Every structure is written in C-alpha cells, then in structure tokens.
Length: 565
Image (cartoon, rainbow, N blue to C red; front, side, top):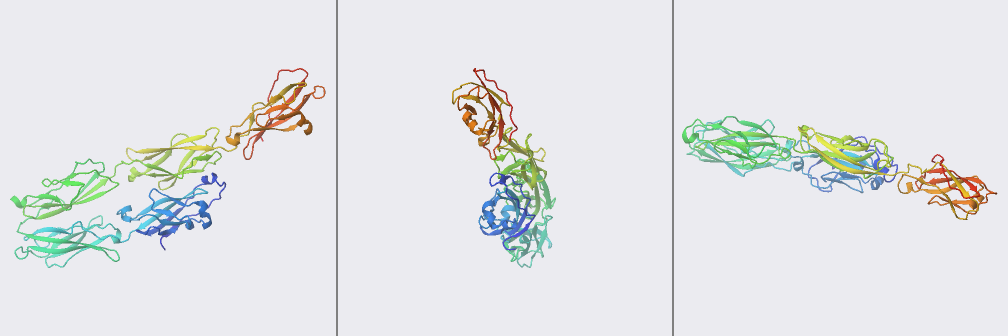
C-alpha cells in the first residue's frame, strides 16, 4: 500500500475549448478518490499520487494547477509530481476524538478546464497513547468487618486511542486478600472492581499497598499504573447503598448553568454518626458540582454538544465510619439547533461569458453545519429568479451552474444570494451574496438608424463638402461595439466613384470629392457598410440614393437597410 492506499472512481478528462475563460466553465467531473494512511505521518510524507490517480500526465501538471481546496490545510499537492503530501500534523485523536472512523474529506481542484474531485483520506489509529490514570495513587478505606466477596469500584484509566489500541483490561499486583474483576459497560468501556477475598484484620495489618495496571491491546501493548492504598478501618457494620448503581440523565446543550441535573441518594442501615453520608465526586470535575449533603448534582458550565457529547461521573457516598459506596452518573448531552449553516465558496468566477451554455459550472459551494441529525441537515437554494441553479455534488457540496441563456445587453451583472437552511425546529439559516459580471461577446451586428437615405445635392457643389451622414449603433462593448463605415458597392465605375464621393470611417459623413454637373450626372446609388471591430466582425449595409438639382433644396431621408452580415 506504500504510504497510502487509494480507491478511485471513474476518471475522465475533457478537452479545453478556449485557453482562458472557457476553460473555467467546463463541467466538474464526478470523482471519488480515497486514501488510507496511519496517523502522525511526518510532514511532507506522500499520501498517494493524486495526479496519477486522476489520470493526469506529468506534462499536464503546469497547466492543470492541481491543488487542494480545504478549510483545514492538512494536505497539499506537489506542483512537480502531483503527489498528495501531508502538510500538517495528523493527530487522529485531536481530529476525530473517539469516533471509530476518522475521515478527512475535501475537494481537489484542477484548472484548464476547471474540475473538482472529492477526496477522502481515512486516518488510521496507531497506538500512540498509553492508558493513563488521573492520579498516581488513591486511597480506599475498607472496614475490617467487610465480608469476603465485597466489591469496590476502582479508579478508571483513560486511553485516547480506539479499537484494539484502546484500553482493554486491568490487572492487580499479587495479593492474598484481594483480586480484580474486569467489568464492561453497555458502551464497551472497561472498568475494574476490587474484590475482597478474605476477611481483613486491622490490628494485624492496617494498610495494604497494591498496584493497579491498565493495559491496551496494541502491538506492543502500552500500559499505565496507579498505586492503590487500602486503609483498613474499624468495624462499621453497614456500607452505604445507593438507590441505583447507574443513574442516567439527558440534558439539552442549552441547559442553563445552575440547573440541578439530578439527585443521587444512598442509605446506611447503621445509626448515628455511622449512618451520616457525605457525597463527593470520585474524580474532580469542573462542569458539574455536587452538594455534599443532599447529593444534588448541579451544572456549573455551559454545555456544547459539538464539543463533548457525554459525561460519566463517579459519585462516592461515605458514611461517618469511613465506609464508601459508589455509583455512576451518565450524562448524555442532547444536540440543540444552535449552529447556523456556514457557506463557503471555492474557485469563484467573477466573469461569465454571455454565450455560456446552460449547465456551465460557475462555482463550488460547501455547506457546513456543526449540529447533528436533522439539525445538521441542510437545504441549499438560490433566492429570487436568476438564470442559475444549484445542484448537489457530494456530501455537503453543491455546484452553481448556469440554468438558461445569458444576454449581457439585457442584464450585465447578477447579484446571487445563496440561502442555506437546516432542518432544525425552528430551522436556522444563513445566506451569502456574490456578484457575477457577464462578459461581452460579439453577438450584435451594427444597426443603421434609417432604412435608406435619399440625398439631394446642389449642382456645382464645392469640392470636399459634406453631402450626407449615415449613423449605425451596436450595443456590444469595446471593440465589439465600435463601428466603422465604408463604401462597399456603387452603380458607378470604381474609378469614377473615387472621384465623386468618400465616407469618413469614424463619423459616417459622406463627402463630395468634386463639383457635380447636373447635365452630365443626375443620380447614382451607393451601398455603405457599418462594421464592428469584433472577431469575427459583424456588419450591416445601407443604400443612399444621391440626386442632383440645379437649385439647392431641403434634404430629406428615409431608411432601407440590407440584412446584417
């Protein structure tokens, strides 16, 4: 498997139609790339050859610019080899806690054409944590009147690893008076119970020193120890008894500090001082407090389901004679819809060609909601009527694509608002707006403002005089809308035409090149063309009819244009 194991879905490459903008609008490919690596790999370690797994050649890498799009920069892509590299520390316990499966999901982005690939890297647990007790030693008081077979719950060790690498069992140093039983809760967690094997005699031996060892199942196994100091007390015939061995309670994460969670209760059949019970936590906690007299457990700090989902508290009840009983309080934190969805744009394009076909990819949208269940399930949609739509890509990822034809001359820009709403009760939502500008293409030919021109010119006009002016408009931008004029046809011979009239390319003004003689030339016809500067250029024609009079009349015009070419 090397440094990483990979599974890949269907790979596909698309041709590049235009070197700049159009390459950005190629549809994203549906890729599923999976790797599996151990945690704590050194920075710079190779996860796998992402470029190769996607079907890219080494020659493509400079233009494809393969990279990782992720909020947390755990990985990067080598620009030279296309290998996926570890770029920061991968601590499975820090990233995923006790979750059995630890998977980092992110998008890989390639350009020219623009494509997105869903990549998941499973982080495998390694046995890098030893079981650890919270105290190096703890004391247990046992009455000399305790009967053989009596059990005592002991200190629990913690191990941040999971599965076999997690804590598996406990063992006790050899003792003629005590033995150890490994117990397991419903959630699979292990805890030790000390068993009294024979009657104790305080006068003969008032202290017993034992070593409790916690071991995981790693290869090799790791372990942690704590010292158990047992103090044998004078006879106190009855040990306190809790009403329940295990108390269970569920708390909404928005429970206010100061709220009473529950009340534990223990009784002792002794009388007087030996029956008076004092409650305490077996291990000190900062989130909850305990009333030593009443057994009330009170919430001290704000809960956050996204941070800690459950607590396991061990409460001791000690009578006046020193006998102790224990119970477990399991507190389950219930998720509340207290997090709005977070919207993130990736590889956002600011300019869209107005001839972009429906379905052209514009941006990748990622939605993240820290809540769980329905509170974390999100619906993503666009606000208002716009020629775009959102389609689901992969888990929590969406594509923003064009949904209909665009026309810059009608709408040069769009302000898009994306709304993400979760399914909580009541639902929470958030929005993000972005402006897209539509790039012009040469899709409009010039249009003359008259269909035809009828021009009257007085005989013996001065040479160089303006005899008419044509005008055309083009709604495109820049060179696509810049119009120039020229003479493209006439019923005069070409040489004769040049000696009679000319047209200004910039203004469309028609000039007489010489004085006209009414007896020799009564009328002639020109075809003028208006052409824009687009590539390819578009044009339109108009035909002025020029008549000559002996006297100077008023000029009248009417329009007749040819079809745009």
